[in-house]
Image (tube, rainbow, N blue to C red; front, side, top):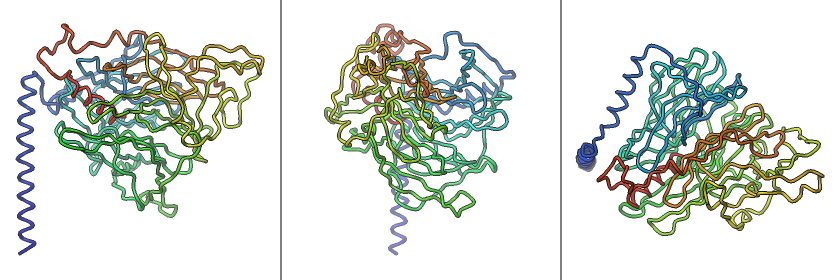
Length: 519
């Protein structure tokens, strides 16, 4: 009798939830119709259908490079001197653009080639991409999101695609039992498997963060949900995930939020770290274990939106930038953006902050791990030392911003006299989050990202390169001086959304949360 009553109550609750959801969905559809927007699911179906009807591959050289963007994928080709960029987003203050272009940067020719192939993956941002060797290189893409121009709708993907770089053809992988739709997740290549962790989903009415783990076997092309032993990281998006040389996987940081009260959420910036350890006796790659781990050295301050890339030569990973939010009260958030660079030793799990001195020595001494002696790695300091440093305000000619504590932002290095070299102005990227980062031939490449200046959010399209062997300073490959000009104030008469109140303070906060989650 008791079990039967409980079953009835459960069904009643499910019906109530379904009824409420239906009302909310109908209300949203009416609001979209008033704005002249289509349902996103229908928009994406139309995009895929239109792409399938294309019958030829179109290639275009982009004289001015790709458009400004953030939250895109940026992968170095395994065998060629190329970097592959896919997707991303751009918000100009009034309208959001989500991209689906695939662009290849030739490192020797310094040219950008856009490839438009039939049956391509639809536009997305905050996805994950992994590039594998074999068959001329394969770019594997999972998940991500698509936003309507007014950001009143978000569609999260759960599809898996592969782009064959040799034949320039797309293939949608129709494998079942994969992860649910999400963005802000992380994916790495571990042996012959894609490993997917975390992320979040937001349907405009509610949100959910994930801490589940899935693997995709590249040989059998099958998904498998993994339930590791041990205590898992709490649900999160935008964490840093790095595959270690010994087969373990490191996960650190990330972002999530909890409801404090109705319509008010509290963001949480995670600073913990975990190792995902495979069972040595397991030959199927299905048995893993979570282990909490403490990273040593001079660590980055708690933040989100850091870009990370692993460099197999020297067993190091590099972390750049990010943002640290400070809640002024329950409804107002201000952010401090960073442009500092950190190195993580993947064997010792020890962080070092890299200081570029801008000095070119007569003899460039390079250590055995491929890092120049010019590129100073700070010695281990007490954990509190990062937080006690003062933030500084810098005007780089484009932005006047608050920059977090970082010696990489210093204009000059007074120690140059000790080596007999001449001190020079240090070139360094401006503070940002959500940029692309990759390594090729010992050179670290950085592209784009987002930075906020007060209520304005600027998307960048500059590009920098740092020779990790010389470690002198960043080389600016593409200069961006138009970022401020691209912003359109919400009260501008040129707005194509007259009568739309989406520019109020509440929506500004929602936009900030969305960016945090994606990164």
